[in-house]
Length: 295
Length: 278
Image (cartoon, rainbow over all chains, first blue to last red; front, side):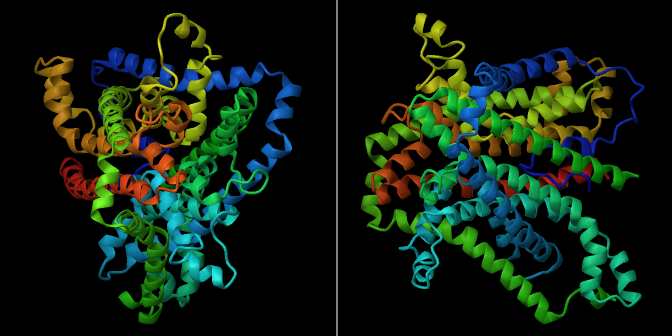
């Protein structure tokens, strides 16, 4: 029961499973030097060196110049859009992701397996494909966007298009994080609460929600972290107007195309810092959850 | 007994309906749109868009990238999992976190990093130019950027699996005189083969579908450095929607095959874990 595959969700799974200690006294396993060496070399060259390059180049700009390009009005507008829409999309995914996880775990209905398989599609579908497909459906000419446009709702080529794309991208993170926790939840406390006269809604709010809250928060944070950096699915549906519907990753691309490496690097450094902060938060939530579960 | 912990029939039906409607709107409709748009002008136009030389070049480049990146990250993933799951050493948790880093980096930022290293103004740029080595806006940069974004998949699939399996079987083999490679090949590998395949599937899907990171480093040279996702973008921006969706439908098909294989594996995978564990 320990290894419901956490799928692509970053961080944590490795630690959760470790039931070590049983054989710790025995002789050491061979191959540590070789495998650790390969791991550290590949990690260092492919991941750490490039990340260090961004920060070193940013430091080279000097604080004043860095602040000027990293927090220019256009960059600030792009951060606002990226973070704001990622937050909105993660919140919407929190609600619908929980609902979908609940329905998949608790109810039996025709098409359940197909629905469950569909949830994973955003993990497997290339983002550019998702972007043009969402645009085809939700633009004014699309089968959902068309009727919506006649009642004055426009979902494509404006910030709501960004949110829509990020909802698509983030949904499986919430569902797949909450699902195993829901499935593991014994029904005995629910039964106890119900026997003591609690209504179904009260049981959900007072008994179930506290149990699944850490997983829900983790899923929310994963969806948010993914959404902030998302590029491929967003640019086709966003409209990409500077100050209005231009996400931060797109601004980096635009500046690179104009050979403005300083601006692009500074914005990238800001996004990296935020990503790492998010990673720390996610690890913290998971560590707390683990501690609370184990002891 | 059961009725105390579930909802009334009507509430259940309502919740199921909302969940299915949401999935249909957010995921199913866009998926279907890829195929209907691709076949909008008939099978002939669809086929012409795929066998057109630039599309074929994009397909070849995408396959080439995956053929290089998947085995490399596979070997790395196995090394990392062996080191982390079968040993205790200081900094093990830190290493696990570092391996996950590429997941939290925006693909565009990942691409930019390699511009900073290999671009004309980059750390290694002048040296590379002086020695006539072309990395940026060429196939090597595409491969490197793809390797970065797919870096964690195999490792993070294998680490929990190998930790859960413990070391008893390997220790038995070692006691009987087997060496490291023998032990790994005959004892560990058979135990992790489904998990490994699972990781390979995910790595491959991401490698073939990566857009942001590759977009930054490729230079978008038609017929030369356009992968399939980049070719989709080019066609789409030229208002060649049928062409864009035709190539996109191949990628969507890849995603569907990946998901089907993944579901199948998860089903078998769960069995193999249950057999070794509880």
